[in-house]
Length: 327
Image 1 (tube, rainbow, N blue to C red):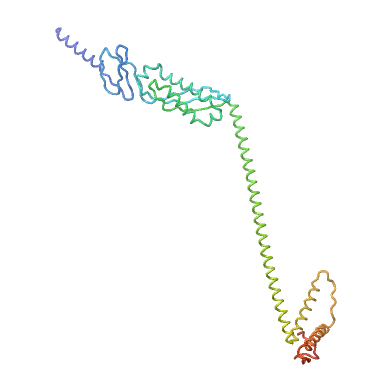
Image 2 (image 1 turned 45 degrees about the vertical axis):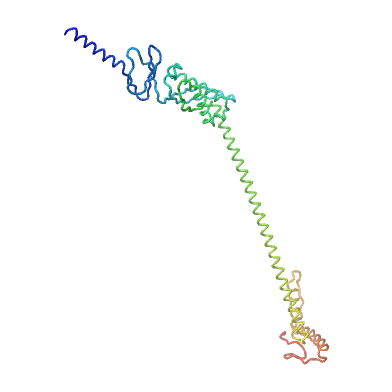
């Protein structure tokens, strides 16, 4: 093999090496920075790219996908001097490869320390009760502060989440006792409220019952008055009819009227609670005779004032006396 062949083979090998040195393949989700004699010139995006061999070189290889950092446990003193332990996670993404490569050294370490510092600042400005109940507010404040701080580095903080907030054991016991006391207090308040409501309902029921009872008494009194009025009207009408009959000379009417009142009087005496002994005539004819005497007096009186002469005895009578059967 002569010298020309060897030269051609060497040139060919050199061309292959130059091609391999100048061709760069960037995987998806990554970005490479290009440096010429140590100075940044441009950024290579995913795909096949060409650089000047032996003059340009790859500076930094950066992951452009969203990444996560674990924030370790750290002690935080709250505004009311309670000591708690908290940890969390931080999600970030590189948007500017050149800034992330040349504006800050140890990017992940810088983001981690910045996050931990702001966790102490934000959580230390809150009371323990606010700290335990307002995690969303804590996350939002941390995200806003840290994202503004890392913006010059070409990094975007997408999310910061507080995972655990662990108070000391004695503080947890105190909180448990406080919670139990608060629940007992609410139970007593609810029980008192129930009793008060029950008393109100019972009073309303009694009031309604008394109103209904009063309305019932008023209705009953109205009915009684109406019944007495009708009874009085009936008595007046009966008295008027008897008076008209007596004025017309009907002796039977006055006999019935006097006998009826006499029997009612005897009935009242018999029903009296203080009456123990009731003396009555032995013969019923004496009672009938007394009634007959009263009727005779009435007949003579109305007879003299009426037609001027005595009227003949009524049919079924004897000697002007009422019938023994009690007309």
